[in-house]
Structures are given as C-alpha cells and as structure tokens.
Image (cartoon, rainbow, N blue to C red; front, top):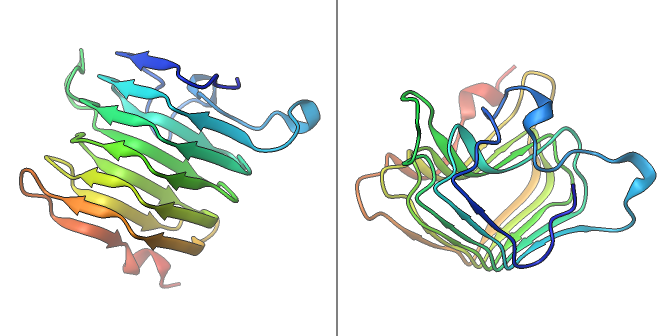
Length: 172
C-alpha cells in the first residue's frame, strides 16, 4: 500500500517485526509502483506488536520524512510485545530523515540486513527503549553502507545504548 502524506496511524497492529508478511504496511509491489515510496508528514502513535512502521522484504527507495512517532508499544492490549518505531528488514536505499521519535518499548530505528540506509537529522528519545538505533545482520545477509549522522539522541529514561551494533552477529 502507498501511504498518503499526512496519514495518521493510531493504535494499529501491523504484527510482530519478523511475523507474517500479510501484516505489513509496505512490501514490494514489483513493477506496480514507480519511483520512490514516500512516507511524509505521517503520525504513528499508540501502535503495538512489532513496529509502528515496518519496511521489509526488499523494500527499495523509501523516504520516511517529517513523521512523528509517539507512544508505540504502550497501548499493547496483550502483554509481551515490544514495539520499534521503525523496523527496516532487508531494505535498500531507505532514508529516515527529519523525524521525531519519542519513547517506544523497543528501538527507535532498527535495521536488519539493510543496504544504503541513511538515518539523519532525527530527534530520537530512547525512553524505555533498549536503543535509539540498532544495526544488525539477518541470518541470510548483512547490514552494509549505513550512515547515521546529525541526529539528536535523548534518553528520557535509561536506555542501554544510544547506537547498538550487534558485533557478534557480524562475525561468521
């Protein structure tokens, strides 16, 4: 699905980060969409179970810009699910720029097996989250060419790390 600028997602459940692909907001559409996919001026609030915005399975050339993320993972109707603000899995050419990400229950922006990823000019409040940004490979690949620059990382609670790079996952 293509997201129109200014869309608000309130208390939605797009499923667990590594769960059923049928729950995804965005997934590859082969030759049905032309050019970059914009997610601009959107709000993601009170989302639960996995990630407020999930880009997975070879999503290419996605722009996430001027979006507002808040309260994600806190409105969980069933306990036990943590929630990233943004989850990137096996994506290529994604730009996450000029966003405000307030406290969530997992990671501000998590990237598994991504290539040419830019995370810039964001305000990310870790809050109760484990990390502001987390980079890790998946079992089938690695995370390459990631730029994390000019962000403001804030810890309104006590996060375990500002940027986490899962080094043990990179050793093979």
